[in-house]
Image 1 (cartoon, one colour):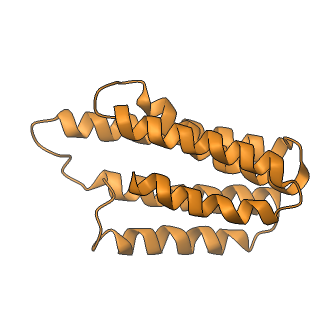
Image 2 (cartoon, one colour; image 1 turned 180 degrees about the vertical axis):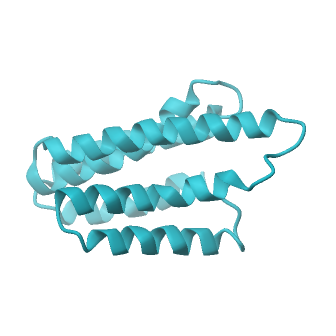
Length: 151
């Protein structure tokens, strides 16, 4: 429920975007995905697809909010992240089912790599300096997981 309240607050800035109606509708779809995931993630194996769809929706919201259409590059980046999140989620579920965890803390690095993948994609599609942002996000996420576990 707390997640839902936070997300409703996050929907408010979408009203400031040039194509706020499209972004708001996509934001509501994302909210529904999040709530559904929260309700079923421990009980249903296909919720890894919902988690990945949540990540994909971020790109969709940006594209719809800024352009009013589904642009190719955000869809490409979102699709790559979708596949990565499915992979990450399956690895995490596999590790949780093992009697002993992996000898190396793999999941924190995989979670941190989400930012790095964004940085690489933006480097290819926009400007090389975006790699620094991706590397920064990777490093800060990894550092933050010392205090707040992400796996």
